[in-house]
Length: 448
Image 1 (cartoon, rainbow, N blue to C red):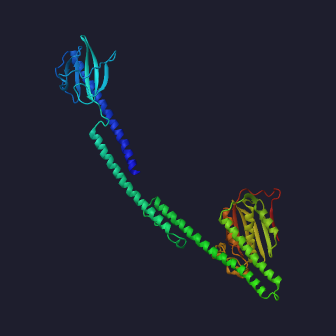
Image 2 (image 1 turned 60 degrees about the horizontal axis):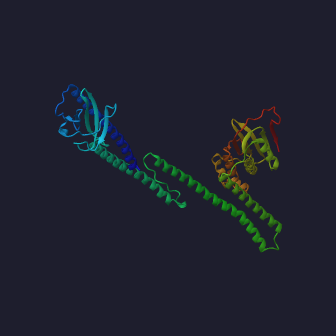
């Protein structure tokens, strides 16, 4: 491709140069012919025609009297018949023909016949000049050809080396990528030293491999934890049933049924949480619609009862665009977590904060150390306190809650509080709160 481009470039430049030189040469030949005709006309008018004309380069000149007799000519045409038979006709003073060759000359030449009116009749001047070749100058054509070949060769060599170096780097990246397997995700492609697009490509590939390694590690941990969590209720069910079958007469079957049902409920809850996470990871579409966050929270809190007192501080008119079902699931997970850890009270607040709609769920339990506030959002993460308090938790509730917040473009964090853990959800507002005097507006503050 580089050679073809260079050849095309040289052809275009060569054609332009040759065309320009040819035009200049043709104009020069025409000027010489015109000058020769003017000179001969002067001699004819003066009646002073030499027997032999001085040869002017490759031109051939003949002057014919009214009787078509050659009166004078240049040396190569001396004593020879007229070089041409055509004459300007009618009112024309000049006629041009290309003859191959004119009489007495060699090669193709442009012959110009010119009429000169004298008292004794019409004289004719014939001037012949070589036809301008297409290349105008053979030395120039050879020079341009040699330069073109050198340019083409140089561009081919330079392009071959540049492309070779580039493709060598790409080939090294390809070979390394082909050798990377699930068991060797720590390998990275080589990064070239030069600052160009190939380097940026290699860095992007390595960054992608970093994310892939982290995601694969998370997946392995998630799979291991999920299999472990699922084995526990299955093992409990198996143990209860095997023991009952070994001693059927001494078995309290209602107690066995209750134990199996409890383990099945744990297994069902775990499977439900795993399906929710799978849908969130797959990017399932959201049914976004403007909702009043206080109304959603109020409806969910009224739907069930809690073992501790729930204090509500819900500002109405806090509008946000979200998926109602998923936000409800987020609130349910936060309330379940708070209920497990609360001593006597849970506080739920809905308010505005600049351009955000804010939901706070705070319990009065032991709280969470600052260094563990991110740990609790990882999947299957359960602190020692939660394990001792409730062995039935799956460790997925807070992970699901945070992921729901993130797919809505919001955040879910743990912030400082005087006592217990304070979970804060922030979502973008999609409208302004209604004024306090409007119907239905106000602050709802009461305790369950």
